[in-house]
Amino acid sequence: MKCGKLGKLVAGIAVATLMLSGCGAGNNGNSSSSSKNAPAASTVVPGTITTQIAYAGRNFDPGTTSLALPMAGNWHVIEALYTRKMNDFSLVSGLAKGDPKMVSETEYEVTLRDGAKFSDGNAVTANDVKFSFERMMKEGSLFAPMLSFIESIETKGDNTLVFHLNKPFTLVKDRFSLVGVVPASMSDEDLQKMPVGSGPYKYTNITDQQVTFEKNANYNGEWQAPSEKMVWNSNVDDTARVTAMQSGKNDVMENVPVKAFQTLKTSGSEIQQVQSFNQAFIMFNTKKAPFDKKEVRQAVFYGIDTEALIKNQMGGQAKPVTGFLPESFKYYKKGKNVYTYNVEKAKKLIKDAGVQAGTTFTLYTTDQTWITELAPQIKNNLEALGFKVDIQSMKSAALFPNVTDKEDADYSMVLAPGDPTVFGNDPDVLLNWWFGDNAWTKTRTFWKGSEAYNKLHEYMDKAVVAESDSERTEAWNNAMDIISEEVPLYPLFHRTLSTASRKGVFKEYKAAGTTGLFFLGAKLSKKS
Image 1 (cartoon, rainbow, N blue to C red):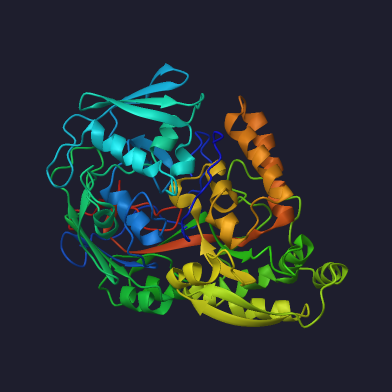
Image 2 (image 1 turned 120 degrees about the horizontal axis):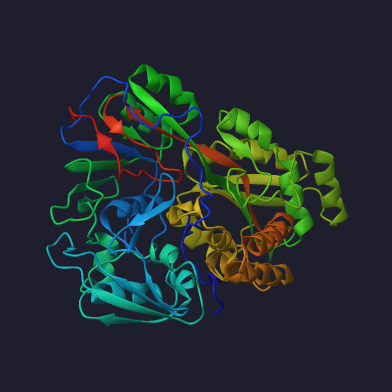
């Protein structure tokens, strides 16, 4: 497998490692990163951070999940060799003791932190790390393509590993941050239900409605848990989350709708806003007419009034898409095609493609409130182009396996949320998430194997082995131009993520720049 080709990603929606260039989003000018000037307040439950989470999911296996809730929970429970701070995408120490030691261009040595233990009291050994890497490198694993540069792993005693690479690869530290280390003794079934880790927290209970944590007494790293316990209440309904937060029974709320800003501020919360990669995207079945033609796919994006969506449904809390990456990312490239609202252009593209008026299809959506609220306008916009559109909303856990993930899938179009920056912000991973040799291109878009797909991967392969940043940038630019022209899957906008916290609860707290809550590095007020 070629270095950097992240093939065979099999995950669902969530849902990159970080280039050392630091292309992540940070707090904007309207956000607040701490409560230093607010009156001291205790958490609702003493010693416990209680939250409202916007997503759900029950597969917590770090090797197979990409669901937003399990991913965020695992940030606090399961350590990698190096830890990604999800509020700024920086890379800091994890289980590893110091940086990888370069023995040669294709050999690196890593030593584990002294005295590291899992929450069950057992020592973290080199064999556990080897096991965790190798299970994630197996065919079909979510992370296998991201680790394709590793030829083999050997252990030297209990605390040292030697990584043998199949070719020179300079981003080993970044990629090592993707592998959550778990005990070699744990089964796949147990890992899905409740994994054991060596991080600041440990899981105590996981249900469909709630995830509970408590401080890991065996943790000896530098990212101490800010509270004795955490309670994460899962609630995909925006109104229900706002009501729960407003009631004063929660300390933090994820994914605050703009219409609730003033309500929550009045009831004693402060809002942090972070411009993110997070987006609503449209995905096509490119083997099914009329969306087998790129011109018709382009017409859809020209025909949707995205500015109106941002203003009316998103309350202005999003940025129009001018390229695959947000403009705040270092490797942003204005797309070859920028889809501004143009009904006449959309109609001409459809007519020139030979599509008859009255073509009927179903627009499938996931069931998150902010996604379902986008659908009616999109339906109206597309019907103005001559289509007839039905809307069907489903849970992600039902939509993808039952509708899209089939060799004979017969759907036409899906509207869903996505944010692969839960893995970091490396453009290589962000591109490969949706356009790699994986479920997204094999059975969802059915785009794999097309001439454009093959050309895209030529550029992506060039980017990850480039010797200079200018060469790498040029390759990524060409890749993103192809995506903006072919649009088998493409974002409608990049969201501004909003997180609410009760005033005075935190002495220091910086909200995550991606989907999910992140509390490592946070500090509660003295009274909490």
